[in-house]
Length: 237
Image 1: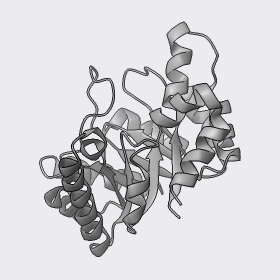
Image 2: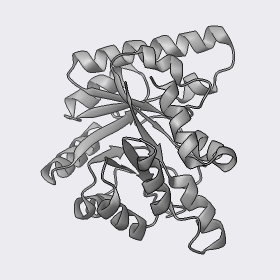
Image 3: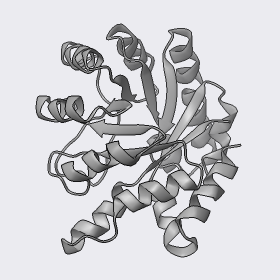
């Protein structure tokens, strides 16, 4: 069964809306782990719109599964990562004005930059994942810069509504996962996955981890965080 990493950014988003202390993403991280999630995911954005550096420091002390830090390929964030030492750092594209991450990294275009960032994080003992579209060129470039993982961007699959187009996007993910595994890259997947579309991707054996946030936190508003995590884990069996 694939592992589940739960992104708790949206808990911090609600907290930041009032500038107070509640709800606490640290408590959310503890609860998702108690419910059986194999990892906690957070994105330390340049504008600090949700997760703060203090959150990250406390999470490093309290997450006993896997702490996955999503981050831009920027030196200032890399310094924080090298200090905090997450179990894995996932390099993602980041634009200040976007509501959520839009598309995968262009590793081909920015290969030198990706190479230097991967090398820097590896020197700090941190496993590195690159968030990429299911595109052969990007996966080969990720392998070339010696990433450990690729996280396949599932946004097009998740957001497409016509069955024929869904099938096309699904097949792209199948082929991308196979290529990555053939090259020796480990494979995870995420973005836009929910209780309706995640299960089909469990048919892709190369995907060993799913990183899901918004859908789980949204469902938790109605059924509670523990049940929301348990329901998602059941779908990933």
